[in-house]
Image (cartoon, rainbow, N blue to C red; front, side):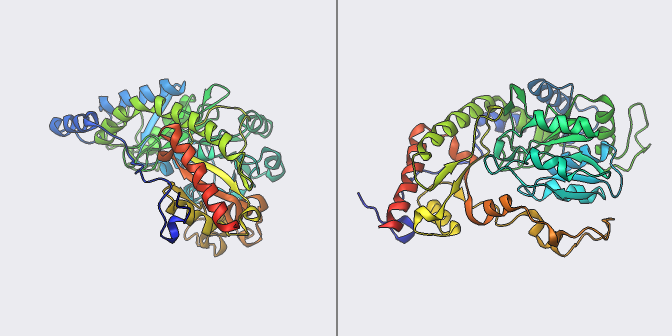
Length: 405
């Protein structure tokens, strides 16, 4: 067996391609039927879009679902419709995609960063309450990588302080918390259908809710401020055209038929990979058993300890792992508050109070995850047979042996 690392010219541990998206002639047919119909857009009379929204809501166990152009807009619609005002504070984790916080700025609200739990990398409920002030109006828990947040505790805190809860479930398609679909527990739940997501049509988003008033406002904001019963050129609120097209919905409706089985597969592979990596010194899978009953593993994350790899920096380890054929990545290089946007307060026209200073923010767990610990395996790598998981573990052991002997 050749143990020379692939990054140094040796053979890869895994030589297969992990293709994404996965599709068949069914998607091609569905899109072609829309093209041939000549009805490509999404006016209010679009039956295809409404059927998909109803199907998505039924799967999630909510009364309403609303399509839109992307997951960022889904979050934006939910936050603005929830009634926030300029200067209000919104609690978010710093270990997430920029959109979770940029939409807060776009609503003229103040992002308040609360550190993550070291076991799950989700927002730490213990630290949420300490961050609440009289200006706090909402919490956006992110089900990062598809791992459910501690929603029981978060909802208790929100109820106590009369706060809105908007779930960022952009990684959590079909994942569950205590048997409930992610996104269905808070006041609203938001999803992304961007190219990398577990359910994709290239771009697109969805908001789900059980609140009719919230739904009607989001629907108006999505549809240029129009309201039910109003005229086409009658605009009541400061909305925009955030509607999804029928072409996108045709793809999603077909792709969604495979999502339950794909989610089950990712969940099983993630559980199995946890058992393999737990036996490797210096490698710790993220914690399970904190309420998730189905994990979507949009990202499989493990914690890397360089001390067991001859002090090899995380970034170098991640490059070696990717070279071995594992569809992996070092993850976020820094917390959100370290981005130039926040360090320089490049907020342009948004009314963020002068007292806000992100140069003084420190979230030690997030910083350790970014700089030292977190390594990601991407979701399409979790759809293969168990033998792929064996190879992932083998690649890690190969690197460890190469750098320590």
